[in-house]
Image (tube, rainbow, N blue to C red):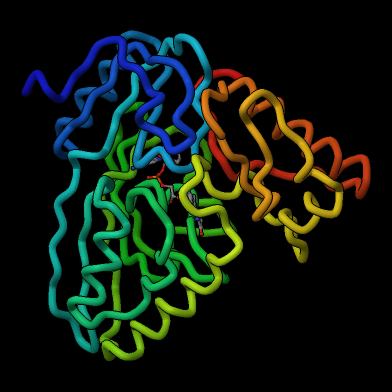
Length: 293
Ligand SMILES: Cc1cc2nc3c(=O)[nH]c(=O)nc-3n(C[C@H](O)[C@H](O)[C@H](O)COP(=O)(O)OP(=O)(O)OC[C@H]3O[C@@H](n4cnc5c(N)ncnc54)[C@H](O)[C@@H]3O)c2cc1C
């Protein structure tokens, strides 16, 4: 095992897009599933918590010390493209950036992943959160996915075993590492793919660009828009310390400089309370939490 793949007592603030939060017991960056399995066992042997970190673009990390190991998937970045009838299959490891997958689809003339336009993060993180836009996600494209549970068991899941829901993967909470998955894509013309990218890019207008955010904080309640509810409740006027609700889109919270995770969390709860008091709707978090809140 290379020394670079393991850091004891590692700060996580630089590893997430909100740019805040404390440190963990250790951070490991395995190159593949067999290396990752070693660190999953290490966490189990130590009896501490374990978190899986992708691009850090949808998480809030607790301030201070988190007595848990963190496995970063960044070095698990291999992928292969195989010809298949009417298109191709892409087998990709968890840490492949979704931007790379989108660029690959354009380069190879494969359609189906244009929804990734403007979404940061990794393939594994997108699968775990069932990330997407306008009703599109990886869900219908996945042929199989491989996981290692925190109890050490390895498994390959076939498409028909995977029940995807809006912003929810088939595996639920923080209990496994998605190591790899295979996608089935159909051939498309460059014009079609470019037009789809333009269409998804237009949907991103109105989101804060360049600010430190973690994407949408809350899931849309069925038949409603969390952003709209937050907006009509006056949440755009709210802030806690350097954490403030975006003026562009009320479902985004910006770290305008030096916000702590506690500031951000207090603001999210304030927003949730407003929507509950006004509409009786309990907004469900889309972001995931590392540590205790
Ligand atoms: C500017 C901006 C725009 C965004 N736009 C969108 C959008 O349009 N649609 C959308 O859905 N999201 C959007 N997001 C949110 C985010 O980019 C996505 O949810 C992304 O898929 C998260 O991937 P990640 O690698 O950064 O995951 P992380 O933030 O690192 O992790 C998110 C969760 O996934 C878990 N996880 C990560 N990798 C794995 C793995 N291999 N196995 C098991 N669990 C894993 C983590 O433990 C954590 O619980 C946006 C975020 C930003 C900052």
